[in-house]
Image (cartoon, rainbow, N blue to C red; front, top):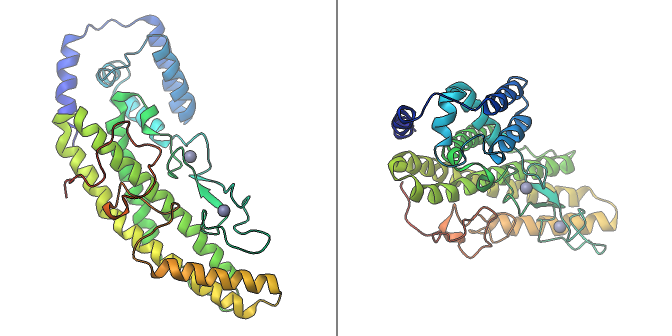
Length: 313
Ligand SMILES: [Zn+2]
Ligand SMILES: [Zn+2]
């Protein structure tokens, strides 16, 4: 993924710009730098947005070139990374308490909550369960480099996650295995959320950055390459949830616990055996064209291309 096109544009832009900066802008940049050097990414972003709001920093596509010239490339990169690392304002790592079951995963009668896959935790609608600040709220000039950063980071995280086997089922503590598998399932689903949002962003950015088409297509292809592996892991984890629940059924003594374990074993077993993830919790229609009937994710553009649009492979 190169940024050669961007560099070329930047050079042209630098040549046409005068070297004079407003002293107030200089002050704002110093504050941003200071926050970045303290590793306070959120503060740096706040100072940056404040400076933009006061007209001290350009808010259009020329911002990147302007920053490279005034702040320097390293600090600009750090600022973009700060944006890339911002969490979603509404959730914790893409997860919120499920309102349907009040976070329990089942009701009084031990009927499982299908909305949250009986986990008690739902995915955040605002960020599509990615846990990340939505790209539409990031300055335009940063969106492309930020998208690439997020994809690279998500791929690394996915590789690390897939490197570790699914939890081994403990005969003595199947409940612990089930909880571990549930935790892993949430991690996988969050990463899928990041990839899905970035796949949507890539399609959106392609129309705005014709000269970066190759970079964007590569980024999109990277999302599409790792997503099936994560989906496969999702099914494996559902299988672990089913088997651990079955073991729990064998060890549970109380009627309610037995009922719950029995229902979980059946529910997760059915999901693990299905070919398509037809639950809104796991569905990722913008990564997988066979899931197009699903709800629209939070970061979908206002006039989206249909999910089945052919993409670079
Ligand atoms: Zn629920
Ligand atoms: Zn969120």
